[in-house]
Image (cartoon, rainbow, N blue to C red; front, side, top):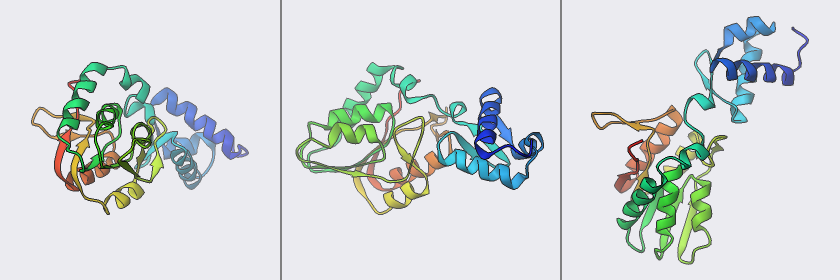
Amino acid sequence: MRDLIAEQRHRLILGRLGAEGAVAVGKLSAALGVSRETIRRDLHVLARAGHLLKRHGGAISVARTEPDEVQRSQTNAEGKRRIGLQAASMVPDGATVILDSGTTARYVAEALALRRELTVITNDLGAARRLFRRDGIRIVLIGGMIQSHEEATLGPDAVEMLGRYHADYASVGAGAITGEGYLSDFSREAEALRSCMLRNARTACVIADHT
């Protein structure tokens, strides 16, 4: 199989990833008859395109990490709306707010739309769309790589940019909350950005429903 072009290898890699949920560099190298370095380059290209998440020694499927945004938006919508209203009620006119990505954060954005003279710093494209035409609300969109399963930026560029800002309030999500009250997440990239959000706000509010 040494004559496979890159596009063919990519399709085979994604096919195996879809079936197994994870792939290893060594096994792919043997199966496709190419070097480990070639496989690493292929995984890097596919990761940049948002098709998978690189891990030490291989990669995992995006679908095995966090449910798709559309699926999550249909789960406990009323509970998330109420959380959004409560989180927004903490924010007075004239404040600076860091707003996380996710379906619950977009309910916060909708509730914040009635505020005046706000500055909202967010990595969520959907939240930005809900607010950017509102008079008296200034949007700072955090840059970085856009996640394929959610309209939001992530990665070291996003963390670096967010590090330049400090806010009065932050509304921050989480992948899960342990029984002891610790926050956890689906990736180190998400953890790094959300940790920065929590650190860079005077008052932080975790927006998470029971699901």
